[in-house]
Length: 431
Ligand SMILES: Cc1cc2nc3c(=O)[nH]c(=O)nc-3n(C[C@H](O)[C@H](O)[C@H](O)COP(=O)(O)OP(=O)(O)OC[C@H]3O[C@@H](n4cnc5c(N)ncnc54)[C@H](O)[C@@H]3O)c2cc1C
Image 1 (spheres, rainbow, N blue to C red):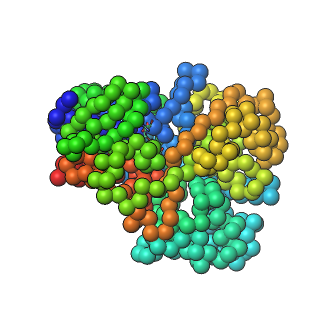
Image 2 (cartoon, rainbow, N blue to C red):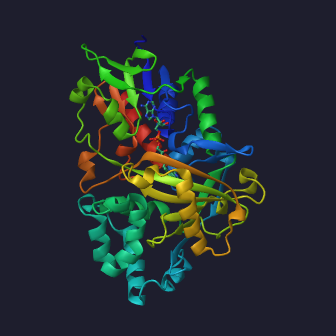
């Protein structure tokens, strides 16, 4: 029992960012992570002496709070930036889509629709966000671009994140994406860090230890609750553990499962039922590149994945190996969808065959290795009026606090979004 201690639950970027802020403010902190590694969705694995993210990750110049945190860890000199491009696969062709001229040449849309899409993009960056939380993206973009352009151009981007749950996503979410990803006037650039995200995670852990934070791995929280005096405690495989304060950063559906009855009753939560979309990433180490584009959207139903993310378009050879190219085939799926649990070998054959339809000269002998990764809780399934459902920072005043992805909205789900949320929650704690 430690009456002064804050117990942080979860060691993804949310938990790490909260721990850095709190310990930096002189608080006594213990961080408890259920898996055997820190980093959450930004976690990595080893391949031939290098590490790679299980799920593609990069930074944007507009990620100010994340970049400031990395700077405080002395990592700014390790971050590098490269131009990054987007393309769209349609009718067996690849259409780059990065400039107004690319859009004017975008054959899958009739000419008049190309103009409307261009004007929609422009308007999305200029208009106010007022009222957009209560309007669906489908209605907003259909109104601005027309039904045909919505179906061909915008809908695939929504489906790429939410699958069949895209219908009710508020326009505010899409508005934020317009403004995050196209925030650069000199063309789009993306950032990566020498040594990969492992570098960030390990540097953060090192700083936390310097600040006296106890980090415990492999300790899954089975229950978080309040005792009869209203004091917080958790149950792990080690037994019951009391703390002066809990700061919970677990993904919302997981948190809803472990929240005990007293905490559930005391917490002012508008909606415990916020659902999450999951993701499957099939990662290919290739001996050849596919395209120069970081992101290739594959919206046609012949593709079992929504996009081809070629991170080697962004990363230096020193970070991936000479002649090695890294491609993630990505599909957002709900954890209840049977495709979510498909064995890796059942994924590889059809997904690779679909990729070969797009790149007929791609051979199995070009594949050095393949890995499949799944995450059940990635993106909240947003619905209209989500601002009213957003969970609060303070669950029980002075005792239980929350910093989790379900609160990041309308900021895009990202490491930057989590750092912003961590700041809000710790501010509420330190008041
Ligand atoms: C495919 C994909 C691509 C992405 N691309 C980018 C990108 O390019 N740039 C970007 O900034 N972001 C990207 N993201 C988003 C980013 O990874 C997340 O927004 C961010 O990692 C969320 O951090 P978090 O700490 O809130 O949650 P998580 O990373 O989910 O961490 C939660 C932690 O809690 C732990 N935990 C869960 N249950 C328990 C329990 N019962 N007991 C103890 N511990 C528990 C988990 O093991 C985990 O470590 C991407 C995500 C995915 C999946």
